[in-house]
Each structure stands twice: as structure tokens, then as C-alpha cells.
Image (cartoon, helix red, strand yellow):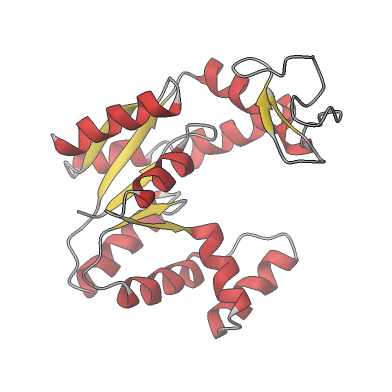
Length: 213
């Protein structure tokens, strides 16, 4: 079975995709990693994608779907998880056409449900240690001493894009462009709903039950 993971920022899609990939049952396809790999290999599509990324612009759908096409051809016969694509209904429609063209069964879409208040705490509460790379969350997994790393004692920092203003803008963009995918996949009877409001191990268990059913 092939899967699409989608949901709002902070829902834990990438974490759960990585956990499933570690089990050996699935290959995790992150579109961000797909861009980086194609650029490092200096492919034609990679060069085209880099030209947009270097200008801070979104990579056009036709380039992204071309990269996905090439990868799925290379992965023929393997199960995979798409993480980060599609993000819009036109992208989902393009992916469905690609699946038909490649004679691959259309993937099921796993939607990670999390209350918005929890998402905001997950994202705005993130703190990182610039010295050793340790990660914390001031709401869910705070350091023993406020503002200081448990491992090395360095001062913790917050990413600029984890500010409440930036997070609010990201969630509004998600509501506008990506949230409608839930209805799209529901009408096609291809959606799996997962309660992702909890620790990653609990969510992993919920995901496993949903996939088994």
C-alpha cells in the first residue's frame, strides 16, 4: 500500500513517516529531500528547481511532479509514503493522473488531526541548542533549567520562523490551500483519519491501527 501523509504544520507527519520507514515497510519520500537530492545530482529538473529555490520562490507543480515521476519509476514495486506533496487540489489531481499513467494504484491519504491550540504550542514552544543540537519544547518537554540545555548548559534559541506571527501565517496558508484536500480524498473514499494529538509513540500506535483496519 502506498500512502500520502498530510495535515497542518506541526502535526508530526515527517516524524511518523520516518518511523514507518525505519520499520522497513515503506520508503519515505520527502519533497524537500527530493529537491535536495536532485540538486546535488545536478539533474535537469534539479537545476530547474534550484533556480526557483535560490530566488525564494515556490517550485512549479510541473517540475515537482516530474521529480516525483522519476522517483516512482525507480521505486517500482516498493511501498512508499509521500510527505509534503500534494499540498493543493491541483497537485493531487496531477498526482492521480501520474498514478494512472504509471499504472500504480492510487495511494491512500493519511490525515493527521491536531487541535490548532496544540499546533501553536508545538511550533512556538520549540527551542534548540546551537552547541549540541538538543531539542526541547517549553510546553511539552522543557529543559530542567529554563533557557539552558540539559546536556551542555548552552543558552537555547528559537528559530525565527517559529514566532507566533509566522506560525499564524503558515496555518492560514494551510487552511486556504491544503485543508481542502481532506474533502478531496474523502469524496474518493481514500482517506484515513489519525488522531495525532499526543506523544509520537502513541500516535505511532494509532497510525498502525488505522492502517491495519
